[in-house]
Image 1 (cartoon, each protein chain N blue to C red):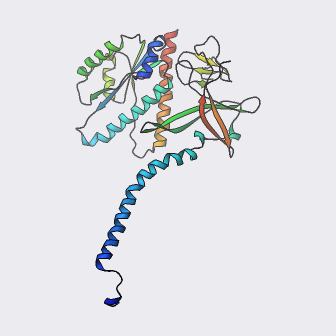
Image 2: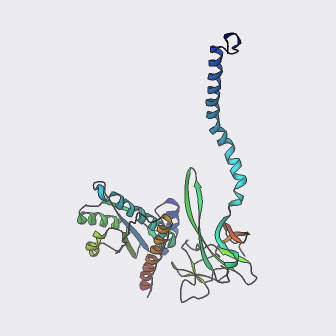
Length: 157
Length: 171
């Protein structure tokens, strides 16, 4: 489910079935010319990925609006802000929280994140044609949804 | 050419030219509104009921459900976007083609054929363990309360075309 009117109306009705929140952490910057296109591409690819993932697991996953931050920002300060988000999000009974990002610098702060971090290293191959990119992303979606499902299974037993 | 024979005066020539050029410009302006008025009519007749070639030859369809993916153009107001669609396609015992929507009738996750090792010969929804028989009917006692939607289909030149997914009539 997404944070849109239609899905939220359904969410209110079926809350007990939606126990997983997915929070995208998307960096952005406009100061480093050399990396602009690469960073933007990663963000684009991750957005497509999230849309597909949400489609796959709609009935149990709430896709939280994207958390944007400046790429070079101090992670401690961002963590404070993320905790604020989580305080609000956790007003609903989510058992599983996943942070999905392409920014490897979160890896060092993994422990401090209030949930499970999934880091997707997205390669920005300029030559990759859109069709190939589609199938790569679909492959990623399959694997990540498998991972999320394994967490569901563990919590059942 | 001599002076006496000249049938068109300079003034007349300029008049004709200006009228001609002006006429072209007016015609050019008229083309887009005219197209706008006529185009939808033309398009409707050529759209052929919204069936899409899903690039699957009929002879490749077996009695084992296989997943096909395709894209359609969706127009939402002025906003056009591509939307991915999927279906599970197989031939039933009578040899008829069945194309089922993979959207779970519970809360809309994507189901897959034999998606769980614990449930062979069923469609499985990974979100809340919903199950469907091969014909797409929901297994009682699992969350879904209706059978999977069925795509309208037709065959042209040996290729499978799929249309809209229709909910089942209540039995």
